[in-house]
Image 1: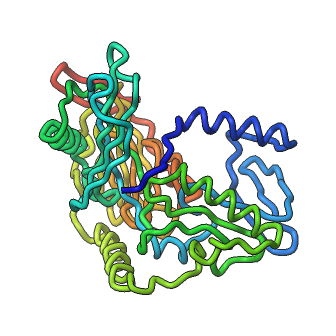
Image 2 (image 1 turned 135 degrees about the horizontal axis):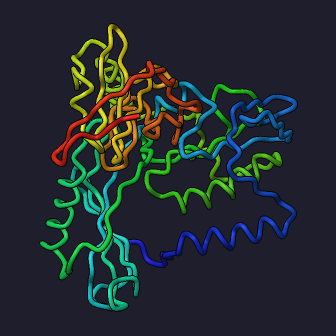
Amino acid sequence: RFPRQAQLHPMKYLQGLTEAFLNLGGRIHTSSHAAIIEGGDQPRVVTREGKVVKANAVVVATNTPVNDRFVIHTKQTAWRSYVVAMAMARGLQPPSLLWDTAEPYHYVRIAEGLGPDRGDLLIVGGEDHKTGTADNAEERFQNLAIWARERFSVGDVVHKWSGQVMEPVDGLAYIGKNPGGPDNVYVATGDSGHGMTHGTIAGMILSDLVRGIDHPWAALYDPSRKPGRSLGEYAKENLENVSSYAQYVLPAELDDRDDLRPGQGRLVREGLALHAVSCDEHGHVRKCSAVCPHLGAVVHYNSAEKSWDCPAHGSRFERDGTVVNGPANTHLKQIDEPAAEAVLVDAEGPLKLA
């Protein structure tokens, strides 16, 4: 039990943080993709449009770093976690944040007054699996609801969603100087689902490190620390990451693209190449390379999120190949199609594909 905890509304927290930052003279630019990140004596960031931002230091806080190809990504693993929010009578359960010790574990928190008729919501998460290794979201949502009803007095599922978390091999976030990289580049990653807590800790530690001030927690969260007693888990995770490249020699998921249904995505082999082919709800087919541009693993389709997810290090892409989540920092390569008409048949008749 940990007393004296606080539960914060994330959007209100961000609004306050944003206002404080702007009042101190900071500037915020959105929709500005950082294509190149350089450290050293003259750190700079170059956007995809070619704009250059110069600074004394750069902090890469992109959930998982997009500037590092190897070091950090061998010490943490991407997991997909599932969540349901279920109706609960107001005040039935006191505000709390709970975990169990199951494998995979469950977590519970209360959202007061956000349920139907101003009741509460019981938010239950879990059923985690490594990113890109399963595609059965509805089954996992159902399992969470069953688990909750066995332990709490709850009503219907009001909301459900999933998200990706980065799990460090030893359970602690990585906050500090980018290991093995140039000077004046810092990272914050390995949040393990505790982004609000770690984001606040990162702000405290990194602001000191950038100004050359020692921080008492810096060594604890140092990204260059060794796995220590977690060495066995470290080796196991990296062996499993290597196994994700086996898809290159395994059969494709679909022999004929004409068998693809609306809402589906499948791996299609054309010669020696593996392509990620998806069909949206309107019957439009998109095709791109199935090879993740980070380190070359083969992506897999996530039908719940309508994305292509990399099982090696957690990169994620939209159906059209647009990068969503690092460590990849570029899109999946687009595959040009010959100008031809294709026809897709579903239960309601043929759909004409552009």
